[in-house]
Each structure stands twice: as structure tokens, then as C-alpha cells.
Amino acid sequence: MTAPIRAAVIGYGLAGRVFHTSLIAADERYSLDAIVTSDPGRVLEAKTRFPAATIFESVDALLAQHDSFDLAVVAAPTPQHASLAAQTIESGLATVVDKPLAVRASEIESLIDSASNRGVLLTAFHNRRWDGDFLTVQKLLAEGKLGDVWRFESRFEWLNPRARPAWKSGTTGAAGGGVAYDLGSHLIDQAIQLFGPVADVYGELDQHRTDSSNDDDSFIALTHDSGVRSHLWMSSLVAQRGPRFRMLGSGSAYTKWGLDPQESQLAAGLSTHDAAFGTEEPAAFGRLGTDGQTEQIPTEHGGYTEFYGQLAEAMLHGSPVPVDPRDTLRPVQILEQLHSGHQ
Image 1 (spheres, rainbow, N blue to C red):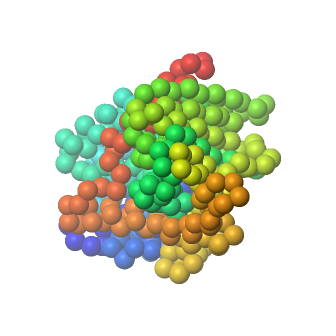
Image 2 (spheres, rainbow, N blue to C red; image 1 turned 60 degrees about the vertical axis):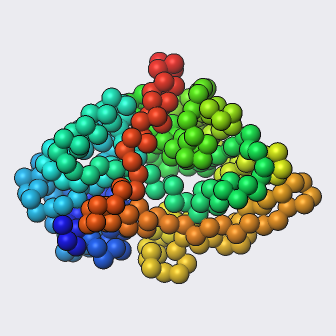
């Protein structure tokens, strides 16, 4: 294969509009050739932003022309991930699936087998591995700045009064509709990347909205084989946020407030080539140390562009995919386990 990689994005909601189309269009090794959406407003926006892309109203129409593409990106609602990825893989297209890769671990295993049998690449969009603050945590751990770490706290919290998409409010938590699947898939993945395999799991999957059928305020505790405990919060109903990260060790602690800026920067139209992209203001930097003796730690430069950069290297030169699809199995197994206890 030679560049440009001909890419098709399936879905033009938040994931497709803010993340995938923006990142693909910013990398010269790709051409954004197609977008699948049937919503009239989204069709108009997609045509305006990407006039060279063909807009298809259905996946069937796209796949009828599968020979015209090299890569399919599944950015549709979570419950559709597995079935759509199965179709794109069967069509011989390298496939990116937005997180979570699927709702069931058995579906992930099936997709991995199908991709292997077809000889096509499969990967999952766990972009939060390239959050600047997460990269900072990784660096602090690698440098041994905290001594022996015994507790890791991680939060995605905010107060969101906006109406949720119909599929999110109408899909049960066990079917992938709640915050545990939406945000927990990121937080669990990050915790495992930092501290390794999980031996024990506890969770609270709470529902406060009366017009929803899934969890909107959840907590997950992981005990890693290493002995580290990860406490993970995810909620869209928090009037005062807790720290994004809080990590406690035998020698020190690290606390960081605020979300990585890359999503908001992409949503605002900031180019990934802008020097400001992926950078945080000093006021948002985390602090390392003990009470009364802390130092400000500059946040590492965020790197969402790394995902499609590494994928291009995989497709063009045979390098590893940015996220091994097997890495997604354990987080989904954990989410399935927790939901099975909350039926």
C-alpha cells in the first residue's frame, strides 16, 4: 500500500465529527474520501467541512464500493460497533473502532479472529492513552517520583444538563448505553496500562436521571496483581469535580485537576498543526510532593495525532497498530462482570 490511505468514517456524531475526521484530515498520509451519515444536518455539515468526501447515507452503500477504500473507521453508537466492524472486516478493510471496541468480550474475540483470518488490521481508538496528563503520570511512574505507589484515583466528571442522544438515554447500561461503558472503558484501560493485570473488581453503577435507562454516575475499584488499587469515578452529574488524577505513593503524591484540552481544542476547530494544540496552561499543571512542600509539574504535550500517525506506519510499513485489540478484552470483561451484578 502507498499513501494516501483512502479512509471512510462511519458516523458523524461526536466521535466522527470531533475526533476521527479531524485527525484523519490533518495527516497527509490519509485522504478522507467518505463519511456515512443520514442525518440531514450532519450531511450538510460534513459536505461543508469536507467537500472532497463522498457522503453515503448507509453502510451498505459504502461497502458496495469497498474497493475504493483502504480504511474504515467505526464511529457509530456503541451497540453497533461489533456488527459494523464485522462488516468492514469482511469487506477486507483495515478497521478502526471507537472505544469500546464492542460491548461483549466474545464479540471482541470474534472480531480479532475475523481480522486475523482476513489478514486485515484491527485496532481500537483509545485516544486517552495520549492525554497529556496521562503521559505525565506515566513519566512520573517511570522516574520513580512517588516511591511505591499504592493508590491511583482517576475521574471523568462534569455536570452536563444537555439532552443526551436518544441511543444513549434509551440503551441499557448492560447494552453499552451508560457512563461505565462510555467513560469507564477509557479509565480502566489507562489503569491497566499503568499498573498491569487486575485481580479483583468492585463497582457501583448508579442511575439518577429519571428519563434514562442506564448508569449515569458510577464508581469502579480495581485491585491490580501488583497490589495497587485504582479507584475510578465517571459521572455526568457532578456539581463540583474532583481531581482528574490523584496518585499516592510511599514517597510522594501527585494531584492534577481538569481534563486534557485536546477534545475541546478539536471541537473549537484548532488545527493539530497549531503550536497550542495539546498544550495546557501552567494554571492547569498538576503538583507533586507532600502537603506544604509541592512543586508544579508541567503537563506533557498531548498526542492524539499519534494514533493515526502510528496507524499509518502500520498500514504502510507493517509497524504495530497503535492499540492492540487484545488490550480491549479485559476492560470489557470487567464492565460485563459489573453489569451482570446490577440486573
